[in-house]
Image (cartoon, rainbow, N blue to C red; front, side, top):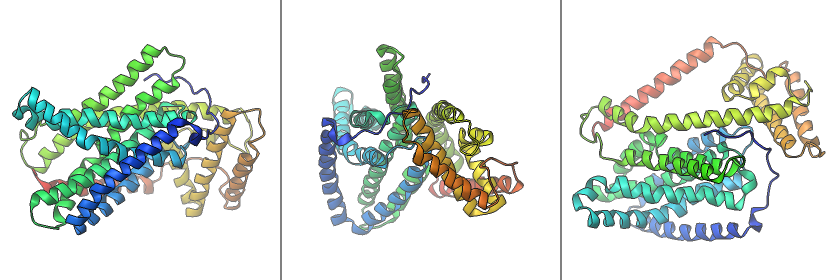
Length: 421
């Protein structure tokens, strides 16, 4: 997607004044009632298994949430809108998709055949209903807070959180379904197996990823005002189709039995079905982030004030990897407190850049200038005056290698334990 240069971040709006806000709140309330009814049935039939599933998948949501939130470091989205996006996926999209997917699957059986529905029903019905329901969540964010969607990356963040909400609730439903199917009463083993398969192994490239891809299309539709409507609508539809196609491939029976039952075979299937959309969304995120970073860094460069941001810090602020490298360098030179201070300085510089993009002529930037200078003074007192990346150390290389080795080992153990299940 060829995203245009940002026109400047708009000032925060008051979403509760928009009629769409109250429509969204009503839908969220209706979804909450419906999902609460389902949860009450689960707790009544399988209390221990249900509580276990709630805890495990709630814990799983935390690192995903933090990672998605960090994607747009320079212009953080309001916490309230992030919660609305997550809640839409968890409450509205799920409550619509559960009966909708079943109805469409039954229609496939009637129009096609029971065999077609058995093999391809989940691959065709689920993605068709679910991806539309999730994408409408990003549309809802646009309707209630248009000013907060000013880049493709914003669409990615909101879409990913809608997908995350959907994924967590759907996984809980599947976990309790596995308990019921096992027929062994209120046991937690089916929950743990579901957690490993649908959460740990499939979570990386499941609904969060599909939602991010569709959200990128909505973001492009909204921000590409220099493009014609036909192109913008076409790109949004292509992004939604990409999310749908990725979901269809993921749910499809392809290679269900063709690669054997070993850990290597299972890993190959996961990679074949999950890597294409994962690589695509990573490319989109990197491209959108770089364009957004270039815009905001240029705003700071116009200040020409090394007490606010130096040349080295301008370079570091524009890249996620270089921001992280600057924090590591601070920790190595001046300790963990310096690392935290560098992060706070970077956040203050990012907030100042956003404020500069909104209204360069206004004096509402004074507080942001003060925040930057305060964190700078703290760093200077620690003997580390500049938040720049240092030379790559052997400790970081060793840490990266050890982390990768542990991740591979954990993945291999999980795959070996599950086998061809």
